[in-house]
Amino acid sequence: MANTSSRTLRLLSLLQNHRFWPGAELADRLGVSPRTLRRDVDRLRELGYPVSAQPGVDGGYQLASGAALPPLVVDDEEAVALAVGLRLATQGYVAAQADATPGGIAEAAARALAKVTQVMPSRLRRRTEAVAAMTESATWGGAEREAAIDPDVLASAALACRDAERLRFAYTAASGARTERHVEPHRLVALDRRWYLVAYDVTRNDWRSFRLDRIADVPQPTGARFRPRTLPAKDAAEFVRRNITAPGARQVTVIIEAPSAVIRQRIGKWAEIAEEGPARCRVTMTPENLDWPAIALGVAGADFQVIDPPELTEHIRDWAARFTRATAAPDALRWG
Image (tube, rainbow, N blue to C red; front, side):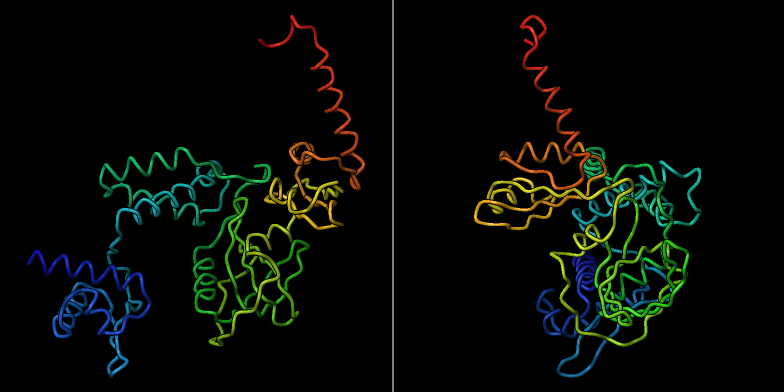
């Protein structure tokens, strides 16, 4: 019985982590005969897991959706990752629960976290708490409260991204104008307590990023599948950052007298670098304040010229004067 029980849990874990298993491959992974595999599948069905079977030479098994959510099987690493993700998702809820919209994704994460940690072994709970305690969620400035997300909207968008299925939804722009959208979803991006759907807008023939809290109702899949297009960016996160502006942000453009490869290695993670010649490059940033560009230009370790905005030049002058005063201070006032 012990072997049967552990094998059943192993079978469930495999089905949860793979959309479809050919019968022969699944039996081989478990080290059992096809007949034993069928009995184990029947046992899962008796426990409430909706396992569907496809007959034939190319047949196999997959875990289908059911009327209720049955217990899930996760290993140690998955349990820690799940709890840490839920804990970080609740940070916005804890900080802004006084005015957050009830029923949002952060509140649902808080409820789920309570259930997970209640049954988690103490050894895993310590690992989870250590990782979560030493991790911070970064935001542009922290001034704006979390945008409440309908979990159904999030789930519908995620499934459409996974299945490469077109979506239709009503979208409200920042101006208040409401439009109907028909898109090919690509990825979801979480940035600054907001969720974005990166998708190709079929009607406008261009890539767009949509804030999920501005989608009026649950997006409706059309049933039409599509061949994924090439995103005009390194990844979806970069696309979103490039197409939205942080509160109070401004564009900074600087010419640096150094090869683009060198500058890209030093500050390329936080800026766009374009080659202007063999030993010169154009650097573009969109920071919330001018302190970060001043620091980045110092890290670049090369001469530079500020193109825009003029305020950055004055900001750097102020920094230069402050540093000059520090180097000219009497020895008695210097830190030892």
